[in-house]
Length: 357
Ligand code: NAD
Image 1: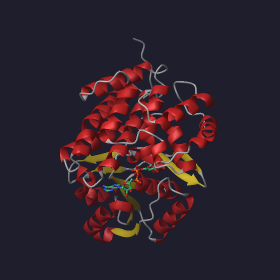
Image 2 (image 1 turned 30 degrees about the horizontal axis):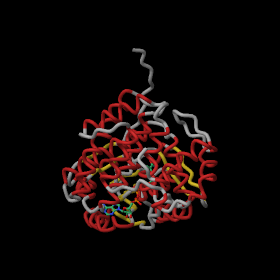
Image 3 (image 1 turned 45 degrees about the vertical axis):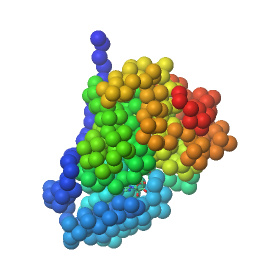
Image 4 (image 1 turned 90 degrees about the vertical axis):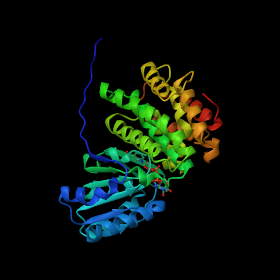
């Protein structure tokens, strides 16, 4: 076998386990940080209160204006909050939206991030930042935004509602699927991505059936960690480009959009990426799931866990298909199958229908 790859992966320190949030003070000490700006909003606020109480004077300020896709004006106010409080570390507790706001600050200030994720979005493991300027979502990579420490505590996910858990889990699966057919894939990425698909496919149905099952939550969060790592080490393809466009330009909800598009983006790439498809099928089978194709297997999983399968159901207007396709093609994503306007229009129509691919 002729094997060629480059494996060059900067990392984050990862602390994983039920109750791991109690390690936050020790992790701040390890970084030599004394003045944390706690970035957290939305339904995670209760956990943020608890963490702020435990950390006492180390938390010098809180920034709670957490908005999905980080509008630029929110980023400006978050940077101002960090500067006014003379913060020396950003403590981001919450889903990808909280992490995203902290990353916007880190990109401007160079402050380190300690991330405490409470969803399966995976942003905490990447150097990818995202900002929304008007109706366009901009993304890029910058090592300054990669969290220095990630504290994964499955107890913090027990309150994540089943519907949000399901969609967020599909978001994580999307990172794994696109990682598997990325040109930057290496043997370690393949092993990691397969294990991630297996862990999520095994964990998510149990999470949805019994949201307070800590073992199921740990499995799903473990899969999300692997998914974030894979996203951070590979290039994003057509699937992520479509989802960023739908979120940035049409304000569609992030995780739900990933869920509805993923089976169809997978089908779109099926013939061009047979190795990735075989790896997904192997991983699904290892979780006890049999399907005629990777795309069908992902769609079946989405249906079983109650995650969205139709873009129409989450507010996408069919009249926007042409414009969306133009934006996606102009973005020239790295993708195994060539990305053409007609191909994207067809993919979007399939994702609108919600039919099994
Ligand atoms: P989110 O952070 O907005 O969370 C979704 C919902 O879940 C919110 O209402 C939130 O308040 C709630 N929630 C979160 N944790 C909870 C908990 N434990 N209990 C109850 N409710 C809880 O959404 P998300 O899907 O986690 O992240 C989406 C954002 O992350 C998008 O802006 C996306 O672009 C970004 N993202 C970035 C990367 C990256 O590498 N840069 C990767 C993935 C996602």
